[in-house]
Amino acid sequence: MGYSIGQVAKKTGLTTHTLRYYEKEGLLPFVRKNSAGLRIYSESDIGWLDMIECLKGVGMPLKSIKQYIDWYREGDSTLQQRLDMFKQQKENLEKQMAVLSKHMAKINYKINLYTEAVKLGSFEQALENKELQKEKKKLSHFAA
Amino acid sequence: MGYSIGQVAKKTGLTTHTLRYYEKEGLLPFVRKNSAGLRIYSESDIGWLDMIECLKGVGMPLKSIKQYIDWYREGDSTLQQRLDMFKQQKENLEKQMAVLSKHMAKINYKINLYTEAVKLGSFEQALENKELQKEKKKLSHFAA
DNA sequence: ATTTTAAATAGAGTTAACTCAAACACAAAT
DNA sequence: ATTTGTGTTTGAGTTAACTCTATTTAAAAT
Image 1 (cartoon, rainbow over the protein chains, first blue to last red):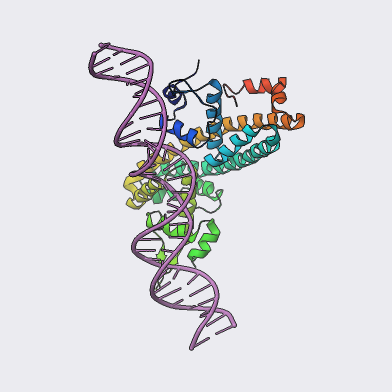
Image 2 (image 1 turned 45 degrees about the vertical axis):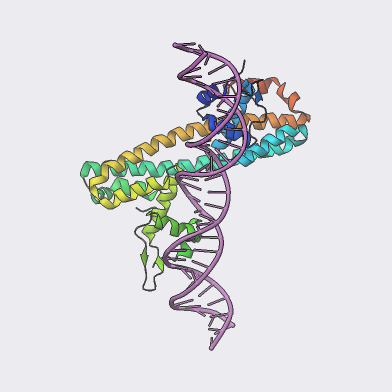
């Protein structure tokens, strides 16, 4: 019952260093230690790590993640703050996804352009392709 | 004809410091200077900045972006490398977007959970909601 | 019984990407 | 004529998030 730090490292893809670092930064305040002082991670600790990965993945700095964990520890008096935080992150995430879609369009254009360029052996000649010119126009400004 | 560094800073949201830093790092090798030594940015330089933002946005480090710019400067002998790079970035981007979708599902669950918790004034009671429990099960493991 | 392996702590070092400071230049505005 | 604003360079400083080192400890394998 419970995982060693090495097992958690394998499970999560983090290093043992990083796991101890997160703990030092206050992101894992629930991890227990056995009589020998070894960390024993519970399923719930794994759950917290999953949440941390999620929040990190949407761009939250570790400090803000710690803030959330501190709110959680404070109990029901911080429910509204936590809800607001998640709503904010949802907004951020939506913006991020919209930005990535735009990036995808640009990259798709570049792939088409370079595919043509490789075929013709010339970047300049690929730029003369009418279809590609049309496609490029849909991407606002954007040279190079 | 041409923008000052301050104008470009406003246009792009970068600082003048960052613009000079990018140049120092080799990301903007085409920027000209006038007789007084002042940088004059062309439309094409703005285009490069737009591309840099795109590549940065999909997670490429500045060093790799410089690599791409160096390939561009080498001319048609590097067309294949550049095509491969964009294909790679497209793959990365697709993975990233899939990851963000998962994060979005988790955050949506949290918003529902905390909305209920705020309504009831209790996190523990919100956890007892059957609908939320069903929703949570769809998110693989994931506690906290 | 000894060697290996996995863990612990404290604290130093690294990397990427800025960010700022100091000292100087020059053109436009008062 | 001088102040203001915007630019220049070099080089140092900052921040976040690790990442590593040294030393020590305890359990597991031979």
